[in-house]
Length: 193
Image (cartoon, rainbow, N blue to C red; front, side, top):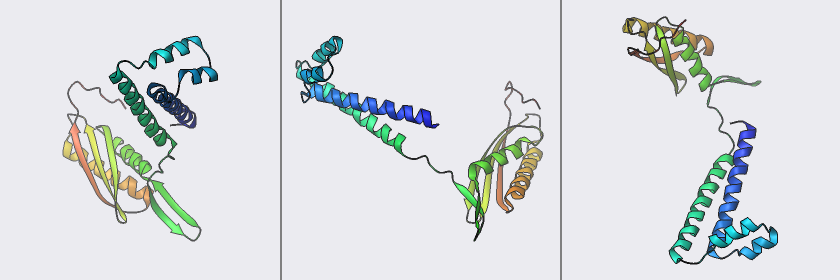
């Protein structure tokens, strides 16, 4: 989410929080309509607040307070989520010395493995996941292949291509590459190269 959208979301949830707290105050009688009129008098707003503050029936008053409090709680929680700093991307450390360190993001390695799988003939789609085991990596890949292709041969080619590309880029061995192939369903759109 970019900065502008994040700022709009924060302002929106602040507005919802303020309005729901005001609704709790008016419905419970802590904030009177005349107090609001002194701050900002607008006839349609005055009439709406008078209608909202009706004391009869009593269960409706409690329902208004409970609903406004629930909305305020949800707005507060969502505001807290928006105010948290963005999460840092997990990364794999390639090199560290006195001058600094070199890292690569897991998402980058995942995209690299997916592209290596897609470069194999007869592969239509590929989804990869990267897991780290101490100092080595494990790559899991799910690939959709042409329904007329030899699954064992294409799966082996995918495994070899992913291993070669990831090891060449990272300069470290890949512990294990697990490939699961699924033939493309009949009638599914074909990928043109």
